[in-house]
Image (cartoon, rainbow, N blue to C red; front, side, top):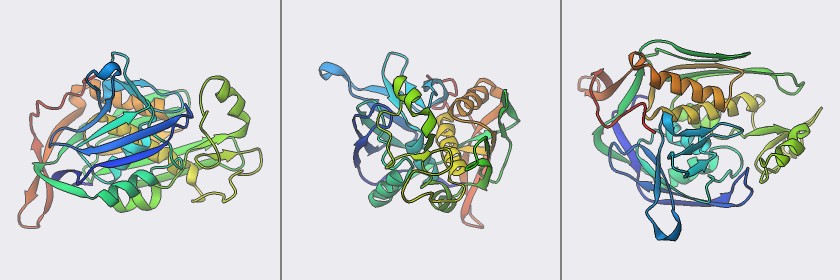
Length: 315
């Protein structure tokens, strides 16, 4: 994933669905944006006031319980952004304005497939501005009990290495690793659905979560079987979905990452902690621009450059 130029959508995309946690109707619109805009979420304000804007950045994370929630620091929130963000990363989209009505991005089938399909139908527009990358210069590591997450230098693109270990006969230990490309994302990750355990349903409902969850948007795991009539899409769909979540959560670094992400027994919280730790250590990253290598006709990555439009600490 080392594109030369930035991209945006060729046309507007409107999607309607339901939030997995709130259980209420949710609408999201994806709009083309100018170069260097990045990924920006827009929430309508009451009484006709200006929309509240939330930039996809490390400082925007407000909650990581069962989903990634971002906000502007003044009360405007947008929940369950991870699958949509993963679609932007997987399809190499740099600039888009996301208008969200309802406070939660629709869950659709519990994966990123609906977003990928809608974006592909709309098409992409290549912009005449070099793509910028966040290059990892040194290891950044977070440990939390049995969970471990770290970003490491890796010049060949964006690599993910995700491992899970559930004490359940249908899951156990699973691992997924790949250097991400559009092809690997669409083939391996985009269709992997979120999952939950039947034994946790009552607890989640009482806490106000998963009110819109169903067998149409969640893999439901009972003691000895998968309750979804059509079973799994991949034998290891559980770890693939965790990888999908990680791709989306790491989009909150603010720029495409040039590095290797390794996670063991992680989730939204760990992913956000690693992004925050990277942003906090100014010696651990550099912003670089892609440049065209004339002899071979494909993207190369130049030396680090100062880019005032990017601030890792942005909130």
